[in-house]
Length: 145
Length: 466
Image (cartoon, rainbow over the protein chains, first blue to last red):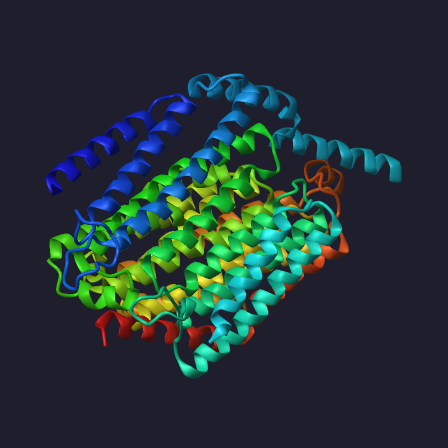
C-alpha cells in the first residue's frame, strides 16, 4: 500500500513540476494544484493506521484509522483551494493587462515596455547629469555676476 | 494563561471586521493601527512574563494536555513576535500617512500580523503550517493589492515559488508525523532523537529548502528582487522586516530545537551556502543603482549571515543568529521606510539605517555583527571572521553608493527623481521613531544581548530534550 501511495505521489508531483515549467500561466496554476495534491496525499499516506472509520470505536480495543492525518489533509485542502483561487485571480489580472497568458509573449511585451521607458528616461544618464550640473553651475555663475 | 491567546483574538476580530470595510477611509485605518498597537502591548507583557517566569503554555479549548492543540511561547517566539508586530505597526502607520491605494491594505496587514504572531506562539507543527500559510497568503494579496500589471506579475511569481516551498513543508510535516507519531513540537523533538539518521536527514533537508525559499537564501532567492521592486516601500518594509523572520525563526525552531543532530551534521553545508549567499548578495547589490534593488540583494546577503550563525551553532552561534535577525529586521524596515522620502531628517534616518547595516557603533547593527564575530572566533574559524569583515565592508560600499546617488545631488534633480514629495511630518516621525529604536538598542544593547542568549539557551535545552 505504501508503494502505491509513493508511486501516485511521485507521478502527481512529477506532472505538477512538468506543468510548472510550461510558459503558460494557467498551466502553471494547474501544475501547482497537482503539487498541492501530491502534498495532501503524502499527508494521508503518513497516517499511522488506516482502513477503518476514523471515529472512536464502540468496542474497546477495536481498530481505528488515524483521524489526525484526515483532519490535517482537510485543512490543507481548504488552504489549497484558497491559494488556487488567488492565483487564478492574479492570472486574470495579468491577462487583462497583456491580453495573453503566454509567459514568453508577456516577457516580450515587458521588454518592449522597458525599452520605451528607457528611451524616455535617457536624460538620467550619469554623463548627462554631470553635463546638466555643469550647465546649472554656469547659469548660476552668470546670474550672480 | 489567556495572555497567549489574547493577541491572536484581538488581531483576528479586527482583521475580520476590517475585511468588510473600505480601508482607504480614515477610521478603518485607525482601528487597524489601534488593534496592532494593542497586540504589540500585550505581546510585550507576555514577553516580560516569559523572560521572568520561563516558557508559557496554553492548551486551546480546555482540552487535556495530550489531546488539544498547544500554544507555547518561549523567549525566541516572544521576541520574534514583538519585533514582527512592531515592524508591521510602523509600516502600516507609514502606509496610512502616505495614503493607501487599496481597500484591503489594513485588513491584509492585520491578517499577516495574525499569521506571524500565531506561528511564533504555537507549539504544534501543523498549526505552524496553518498560521504560516495565513501570513503568506496575506503577503501575496498585499503584493498585488495596490493594482497594476507589474504587481500582479510579481505577486504571481512570489506566490508560485513560495507555494512550492509551502507544499514541501507540508510533505516534511507528513514525514515527521509518520516518523514520530506526534505533532507537538517538544514531543517531536524527543522522539526524533533516536530516529534513523537517513530518514531524519531527509526530513531536515526538506524543511531547510522550505525555509530557505522564504528567507531568500542564495539558490532559492530568484523571486525576491522582483517582488521587493514591484511593491510600495512600506510593503517591502513589511516583507523584509516581518515576513522574512519566518525563515530565520523556522530554521532555528525546526533546526536547533527539533532536529539538532541533523543541524550539526549539515553544519559545513549550511556555512557554505550562507557564504555563497553573503558574497552573491553583496556583489549583486554593489552592481545595482536602484535603492530598492540594492536593499533586496542586501537582504539575500543578510539571510546568509543568519545561516552562517546557525551553522556555527552552539550557545554563541544561536545567540548571534537571534541577535542578528532582530537587528537586521529593524535595519531593513528603517531603510525601506526612509528610502523614498526626501528631506534632511529622513536622510538622517536612512543614514542611521545604513550605518547599522554596515555595523558601525552605536547602532543595533553593530551588536548583530559583533555577535557574529564572536561566533566566528568561538568556532575558531579564520575564514568565517574574514568573510564577516569583507561582507561588512561590501555592505558599507553599496549603501553609501546609493546614499550618495540618492541624496548628494542638486535639489531640482532630486525632486524630479523622487516624486513622492518632501516627507510629511507623520512620515518623518515614523522613520525617526524606528531610527531611534535602532540607535537606542545600539546605545543600550543589554536587553538585546540578554534575550539572544536566553533564547539560545532555551533552544539548546529543548534540543537535548528533557
